[in-house]
Image (tube, rainbow, N blue to C red):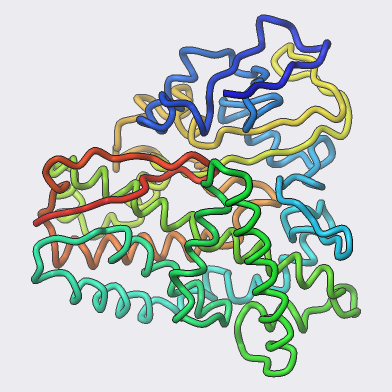
Length: 399
């Protein structure tokens, strides 16, 4: 496992190579692994791992501060994806800081707001039932292929205005980009995405529709059209961000549901509490991380951090902070409501959070209504993908 040396200003006792994302210990049980960081590591430590080099935050309070303090922490250049020197672009809105960041988000907020996504409720519910129709009588399915992937991804493609017949190809590209251990495989997927979207943008310019891509293409900032580079960067980021996160979240949840029949029946017995159920499962099964770069020197918990240092909040670990969520690995639908960080927070909170919550809620309701009792296929042992989105690679279920 590759590592990067820490700079001179980092005290030796704060240097830890924890193997986040890539170690066998992480891949065996990533959420359990991240929960143990509170016992194994200081609240703020420097990771030398190839995927997480820099300061790592695992306390809920510290991550909340980072996510809300744009005066100290910048997102500029915050993603690891390469750029074509002939066509430099920013991935938007994630690589824009306030106030510019809000101007980009305003373009899609009407369709992704709580009110905006409610128009999709019946569509999502019908799709969930159509997918269950395909497998219910069979008594088994590959959940990730039959439900976990097509439910959120199909809705996302309609939202974007992208073709459904390309769904599996799109997912393959994004999975290779985010999870491939071979840089050549990830690079090939990335440039395939960029090449496809260049053509798709041109098609939308000629034949606009009501989808997110057309809204971006025809969007304005301060009365001026968005530049071609920013249209491209916004579209590329939305494509990458929208195709894997809810998919992975559903896989994590159904793996747990299959292993915990008593909790599954508790959900069924408490239909009026579906909002609390959804929120607790999202807390318990967070799938992403959030990184920044320090703009100026700062001291947190006595740790002196320097301008230019990379800082990453391990968001699932922050959701396991025992000072905020006692017995954090327990799934407790009666927990007092507190902010969870699965969708990050502050100005850069996930644009699709409201849609993701709706998809998860409906996905739970319809599946448990029709297939309340199910288990993992005998002999199956989950394997988790390396990479920046945490979830099992496959999930065979039987009932």
